[in-house]
Each structure stands twice: as structure tokens, then as C-alpha cells.
Length: 222
Image 1 (cartoon, rainbow, N blue to C red):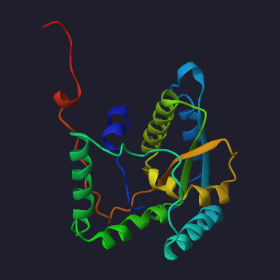
Image 2 (cartoon, rainbow, N blue to C red):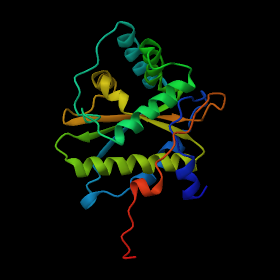
Image 3 (cartoon, rainbow, N blue to C red):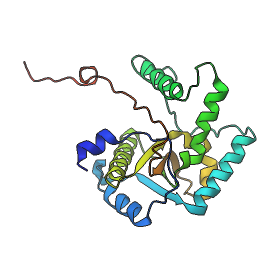
């Protein structure tokens, strides 16, 4: 698979089979992903990989919190600006309409939307999950580095025939994740990432992208 195919075939998959991901594949992907760029080579990412009984334990703990209506944890970072302006507001709204529309859930059915969102805590059935932390002393540039690292991981997973889904939603239960992983106090959970083989029976509508002239300006002097 060449890099163009890896980029265009990567998408947020929300349905995985139970087929296990070989440990050596995960090690190969993460060893290679370490070559992702970072300013001054800080490599500010801290990744934890959960499989087997450890992942089952996390799913159980989180599921119990969801079932009892335990509120989300105090956020450690702002996932979206409180007043999202145009065109970002419209793009986010269109994403929600497409995702829940594919599930037959109307906008006004908030309960059904919450039930669909709860699949996050099952990692959409994936047998492996990566949790990415960053040191809380880091600034915006280092958060950008973490994003490049995660993209590198996802593209390498595609090269291995795997799919993934990044989930900032896991930050809403960062205390529960910490109970299982025991990360140092100085780290913030940025996101989780479900990893596995795609369940082809689950419909995955592809989210569109803005046209080139909406996001790119060529200044070539013409």
C-alpha cells in the first residue's frame, strides 16, 4: 500500500471484528511511528497499548460508570472552542448529521444519540486500544507534534491492513483510564484510539472534505 492509498483509505472505523491484532504488528507500527516529526525532537507523546484482560477491565469499569449515570470527569483540556465559528461550526454539524443519520437517529433524539456514543467505551469492538498522553507542561506546538505522531500511527496501521478510530471521548473518563494504566501524575490523557480489523458488515459513511480552494491558498505570483 503506497502512502496515497494509506491516506485516502484511512477513516474513523466504528465497527471492528474480534480478530486479534498480533503483538509484533503493534510493536512494528509503534517502533516506526517514533520517527514522526517533533520540534527539537522532543517526542512529547506517551502511548499505552491495552489488549486482552487489561482492555476488558477498562471497558467494564467505564461501562459501570455509564450504567450508573456517573458524570464525566472534570476536563483537563478544551476539546472544542466554546463558540465555534463558521465554517467549523457547519462542518461539525454536518458530521453529526451524517454519522447519526446513517444510524437512523434524528437530531432531536438525544437519548438514542447518547446510546450510540456509548459504543466509544467498548472501543467499537476493537481488540486493541492505544491511549495517548502528553506532559501537562507542554504547549500548543507539542500538542501539534502529538497529532503528527497519531497520524503516523494510523497510516502505518493501514499499511498493515488495520483500521483505527481516534477518540477524544476517552478523555471524559480519564480517571478510569488512569486506574488501569497508572500513568505519572504529570501526564494528560489526550485521546484513545481503537485498533483492529474492520467489520465489513457495519456501515461506515465516509465524511467528506472541504474543496481545496476553501482550505489552501497558492501564492505563486500569477
